[in-house]
Amino acid sequence: MSQPSPLPSYISSATPNPQANRAPWYKNIAPTYAGIFLWFVFWQDAVNAPNQGGLLSCGIGWAFLSLVIAALVCHFLFYMVPGLLGMKTGLPLYIVGTSTFGASGGFLLPGFLMGVLQFGWLGVNIYFSAMALGAFFGLEATSMGVKIIMIAWGVLAAFVGLKGIQYVAKVATYLPLIPLAVLLLLLAKTIGGISRFDPQAFIALSATAAPSSPAALGNFGVLAFMLTFVVGFFATAGAAGVDIASNGRNKCDVKMGGIVGIALAIIITAGFSMLIVAGTYGSPDLCKAAVATAGKNGLMLQTRGLIPVIMGKSAGLIMFLLAIAAFPPACFSSFIAANSFKTTLPGVNPFISVGIGAAVSILLAVTGLAGKAIIVFVIIGATFGPILGAMLVEYLLNGGKWSGPRAGFNPAGWISWLLGAIVGVLPILNIYPVPAAPVAAFVVGAVVYGILAKLGMQTALVPLPAPLADTTR
Image 1: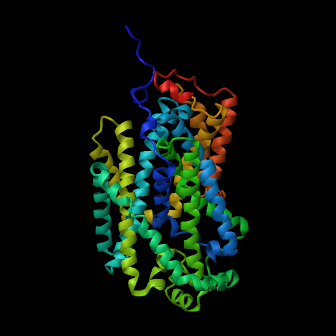
Image 2: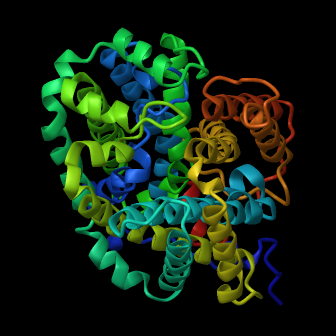
């Protein structure tokens, strides 16, 4: 009589993605990631900090250099190891993560957590897409009409994510071109003011518009805030690199897909957005119009908010197109959540689990909590940063290979995640202003895991059945 497998069925029944199903980086990894950064919710906040002068307080050059550093951190620290693990094993994140968090623990972290956090992203998508559609229809941001759009958008995205993602994926191949075209159009309209942008004059203008706003950031402050914004946004997408890069053929595909789809895409989209804001406030006419629209929070630093100033009567159409282009990401968030819940909650109808999650997403949007995108980024970065830090150290300790699942709940992984997450949320709780919190959480997760592993606080490896055993070689 055969002995029962010590592994949970979700691991022992997994099938690696075969080489025959894989393709070059420019057909899968790069376009998948580039589409994420073309989403206007990412690039609209490229200079949006509450301080006087925002992230342009030290000039365009330093802001751009900070952006490049953040892009490289995303590629090398938050993506490369998950990507290589996905390529080498052909297995999804919730299985690869068992080497760090255990065969039982990996079921919840990062598997279930990935699904839960998708509803945070869905809430952000619902909020900003509804704002854009509301602008097209001439609705006030707080009107009942916008709230109805939020409800309809969330329900439709959740439904399509559950049942019709294959159809959305076909359309999504072309829709990301819309925000790219919008960025190019806005840049063409504002390029004349870029050379005349004066950071000191901009700081003074910001102080006049909002005298009680925090003082301008210095060089380190700009870099730290840029890392918080960019890395926090990317954290879950970096972990998803396991699944995305499992479609790559070799190490070159993983590297090139990340360089083009992540680093270059971040620099282009957020870089264009940064130049658009600088060009707006460097142009006398556009600056005057932007100042006239300043609200109680001071100057508008969000690129999307400057579209009416730059485009005039065409702004509504631009907003509408950006919202339409944001629908596939909403569906993909629902789709990822549904897949996660189908695995971790097999006894629950996915319509129920995803429906509950979508209801929470809609509530976050309707109440306006999802509109605080930077805070959302910090929370997500705080929870996934230490996961990726621990996974990186586990990968290095095992000689650049996947070690295979560890028994039960691996203490080294769970303790490193908990301590890293605590450090990451300290600024959100107003306990301590940790700079670049998502990166700090990553570093804590990595360091603590390394120490605990050296102290022997890892559970034993569980032998894998063939052909899964080949994935650890």
